Length: 635
Image (cartoon, rainbow, N blue to C red; front, top):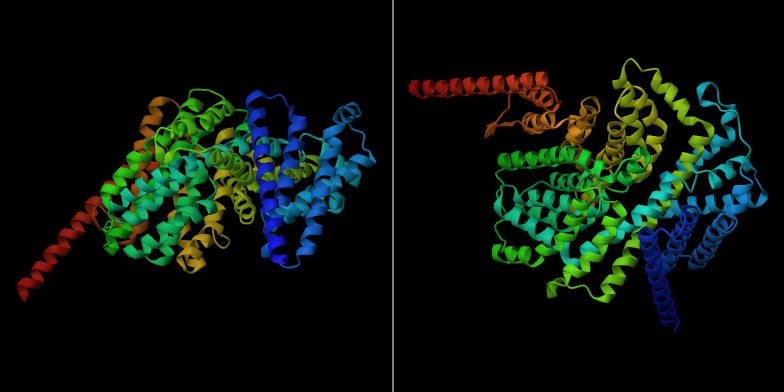
């Protein structure tokens, strides 16, 4: 009887969770379409929905946990803290606005409750690292006046800190949570709709077709599948778990080593962060921080994304050549072609979204029309038709997928708020200004901060924090704002394939049953272009489409040739044969890097080095051939 009661209880809770998620999703869609709820109301409402869903989702999973009574009490307390925390701002905002700058016991209590709930939910839904960083920053706000030198500040009372975090536009309800409320829920719902309509099956069919046609096809299909899934997801670990479950076993079966197969999947999946149109949550925040359109962010991301996936493709191709790995044989090509035709129409909503954003329509309008179009276009074929239940599941699923990101954004708001209140950003800026005459050092320091921050938290949180403390100073040094923010965004995201804490690599290693550290280093080597490209486009913005048409047209071909040359040097392969001479490998890598850097002079030098390597290799090959003939003649 007890088991039946528990099962019924879980079923009821699941129904409540689904209802709350659906209504929350509909509220976000409605407000994005009509904007009748002010931002000052919508932000706390969004936090409330995220907190309520987090609690409900945890309660549904209680059957798998020990100490259920403790979890129930904790969830009840967290829910109380969330709802009580947002109540003051939600119901007394006009009074707070009239008394701007004046703290009160009610605000201090509500802010405290909200901060506690955010820290708890972040540690549960995102990970302890981000919550610990937030606690450290709060300790800094309380005790920073005792620190020496530029790290110290004038000191703030507890009530002042809580007031700033609660009321100020740079605190909990600042840009991060506004982005979550306005953009992320909408795009999570859009992604759910696109996947439910059968687009994921189209992506799989395209990947299977690639695997059946090309050398090393199993790994190349992983790149295609992960890149396509990245278009609608932008979450590395999620991409790994979705596509890796079938691509990694297929790669291993084809002859790829375990750690290389897992590295390919981790690297290709992480690329979803820089792959338009979604690019993870950070791209929406970037558009808000820079005050430019999302279409401009997409345009800036295209060339680096192409170079990134092209480099992975080449590494796979050269590896397959050396290890004599061919295409995947046991595939039903007719069935694959049939599936491509069957699901081809489901890509139209995504294409419409991309075209409309590029054409200058607002992101909100484009996303909402894409959501509406998806079930309509899916109805063209019986296999893709979306039922009412699927539509409801799509809206609810998108809202539930936003919970972890919402918690991360709220927690990032705490950190950004402390940075703004204490002037920590100015202290960090002073550190960077010490290297004002050597900007490359300032960039390296920023890169290290991004990588360290990103090791234990989502890319969006790492990006928001580092952009707040480092980006203004780098812009002061003369770098373009969009180039600086793309630089921070890249390194915040690619920490997931940077050892020793490479979360996407470890997820792939779990599927491949490979050594996590070896997989991490394989992924790092495969993703090397992503660690070099940011330095190139910061100094030469042509790589992110910030120059004229002629320069752009000359930049792309040379960058592609340069990428080919650089990967040739890395993988000891050139023009259809092995390149084992270390000196020539170093020269061709240098030439490749010079061609990736925009500019006529670097392109000419790079091409020259490439020609030198080619001619030297031809001469050496001819001499080896003649030497072999002489030995044969002597025998």
